[in-house]
Length: 121
Length: 121
DNA sequence: ATACTATATGACCAGATGGTCATATAGTCA
DNA sequence: TGACTATATGACCATCTGGTCATATAGTAT
Image (cartoon, rainbow over all chains, first blue to last red):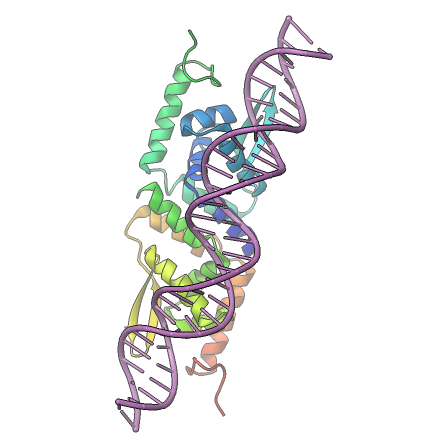
């Protein structure tokens, strides 16, 4: 890995929203709507952060019908793995991270109808 | 550690010059002039990067006569340690990092008269 | 005191960044 | 085909960032 690549990866990590996305994707792959709900952010913003993570090779995506699912790319370089681990392992104790995972669990429990928030009447 | 702190640390890492400084300080403590020479950058620029690293708690400094020596702070939190390790260990193979260490070694060999570059006539 | 050295910091600028809004794209369903 | 849904992207703006130059600070030496 060259230093430019390392710096780009670290830049991708250096943002609250992206850190939270990485933490969430570390538990399971998720589509944009799901991420928007947990992060309580709008679709445009989340999409942009995902685009950045995708560009750096930190996440991958696959379309499934209308939804596009994002996942953490499997590192092919040791440096990539080290950096990613320092986030997913080293920061696992962060309060925000635990809260996000809890929120994700609750949203999942309410049924799979993401996309509109909560259960429909 | 809170997410804000983690993000600040990662921001501090997300720059070529600062990554190189961290790598150099990982081998031994260094003053500003020494860093300027290895990095081939000017004093003002290096000082500013050091100020940022100092603010985030990544490096510490101690005055010794006219010189101020910088060193890597010993991490007190596990998260800090993980992040720092991912740099110093995970990125140790970077070409730029190895070149910098080599250059430092050569400068040391030429004698301890840093501050003006090379040996005086 | 003055002169010199090492380092820090303020002013300034060009470019990057993160957020929001509006719009475009692409897949689904009728 | 058109309506609908999920996602991406362009335009815009305020803020941040990294670099450079000039200046300030602090220690040393005379």
